[in-house]
Every structure is written in structure tokens, then in C-alpha cells.
Length: 203
Image (cartoon, rainbow, N blue to C red):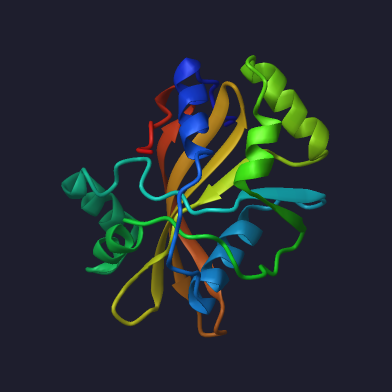
């Protein structure tokens, strides 16, 4: 079912999402592999380009604030104990995606300067028109959290956002596991918000 379309809260959420934050930590090889698996899993065949926010999200959906509910959701997905705690710890700070990603489509990281230029229009609909004009064929803007791991580094918990217009978007909590083939695979996902329920992340 296609996502519902939000109102002005979506614009505020997007503006805050696009705000840049300095990050001292860097993305490790293991996390990059999780990013690749998650992004490739969601790619539609023939997608010409994927646009990804250059910095990770932090915790805009307040997953760490509502730990009891989040822990129940993570358990339903099959996340081992400690995975959510590691996710909360890692996402206390946003980091730059500074490693090349092996994706099934061309991708572009959207940095602060590019974001400011594309979303400078006062009218949000015009801003999104500029975005889709600049990135023809892109499904929208994707933002990723850091990955939280279990003690054995065999499971990874991720939060992913997809923004696709003034009133279009969704955020999901996703569990991945490390297979016998040495690759990460998506096990399941739980929706956290859609359209009108867009969270307002902290600056």
C-alpha cells in the first residue's frame, strides 16, 4: 500500500532531517555492509539513482526515548537482547557516510550545501520539484541510522527513512542477520510512522 501523504509536520521534519550535524565518529566496514544490504534489498529493478543523506539520522523517531515500546518492537522482529541498547548508544551521535557503498544502482550522497540549494524554495512543493528535476528517476531521499549490533555481531538493527514529497514518506525499524554466506540479509521490518505521523527529530 502506498504511503499516505503528510501535512506541514512533514515539511518541518524534513527541514530538521536536512540540518547538518558535526560527527567525529566514522562508519566502519561492518556498518557499511549492513547499509548496502538494506539499501539493495529495497531497490526496485531499474532504479537509475538513489539519493542518500550524507549524515546518519540519529534518533528522530524517539526510539531511545520510548525504550519499553521499542524493546517490544525489536523483540517482535527477533532482535537478540542488547541489540536495541547498542543501537541507542551508537545513534547518540550522527556520523558521515564516508565509505564507498556497493549498491545495485548509482547513488549520490546529499551533503549540507546541496541540501540547502535544492530545498531553498519557500514553497515545499517547488523544493521537491527541484529535487526530482535534479535527480531524475530517484525514488526520493533516503536517510539511514547507524546500525546497532548484538554481542556476536550476527544481527543488526537499523532505522530507515524515505522522504518522497511534501506529503509522502515513511520510517521503519529493520532487523538484518548475517547469513552463512557471510552476507547481511533483511529479516523483517516494522513501520514507525507514515506520512501524517512524521516524527520531529531533534536538531
